[in-house]
Length: 295
Image (cartoon, rainbow, N blue to C red; front, side):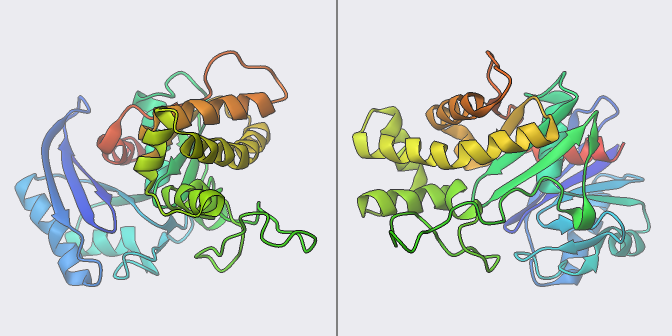
């Protein structure tokens, strides 16, 4: 069996896959975010429960493809650590580590919504905005592991002629107007507050929009206006032909359909079939992506 894990800020999801790529054993454990010894112990216990000769991990945070150093703001015990090497030394078995958004795209390209496409740009629309690019079954990681990370860099600009007329919000990266500030689940909540002056969570906004409520529908339309253009430009730049979506907003079918319509309207080459589609693999995508990445 091959042991695979999806490491997030709240939980570590670990599963053992058989040679047929089916899960044989699975366990979910709270992530010991600040304790390296406890972090290692989670995997040591899993190896005891499901003996394996290899471990593949999808993790939150950037993974440098050269040195293997992980940059992870929400899991301090692995931040700045060459995770694959250190875990391999501790467990005495080979370890492969990939970014969790990359793993999502790899899984959807291999077994999910993007099967049959040579070049896939997958996106995460959840607590933040993430993404990954896969070409012919291989992750395009980029310098420092930032390949596919489209959430940062200013895309919303204010004007001194009309201050406050455009939703320019501060981003956690230290910049202002990043796509992450408007394209995430928190982002659509910020947009709703900006437009209507009320605090409503993203699930309620998207459900109300699907039901035809005017203010919620206006928020979704504005969201798709702001996100659709940059996404279309990325498709032009990467020549990707499909965009599977993960994260909480992937469950908002009306929003995904509207975003797909905006993206296709911005493409230079007409496309008659959906390009932006919800991922099919659900909460197993990270695990499956780690399995595929492990070869």
